[in-house]
Image 1 (cartoon, rainbow, N blue to C red):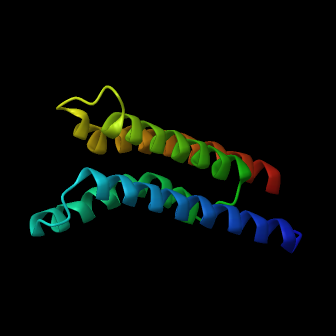
Image 2: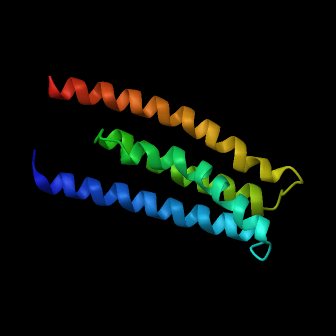
Length: 126
């Protein structure tokens, strides 16, 4: 396979991951109270929970544009939902629950994308 598409794919994957980590970090930082010591301990697990469904498929050995594009779309939509639910016009007392439940849906989407990309990669190699 040509090295240029591999390099471009790697750049895109790392760019999506970096942008998502920065976006999640911004949301967690603005939603919390960084002056409290307990906040610092609780922010890390929530951040990892929020980042994992996007990071895992981008770090897998499966190199398929469908997987990368699907995860990128899921990341953009996820940041939109977090931002809208936490800071939008319809903020509620239960808005913080999005930090727990959205990653569950993202894991389901990630699993579907991984299976489809693996099947498509396998077909391509045969």
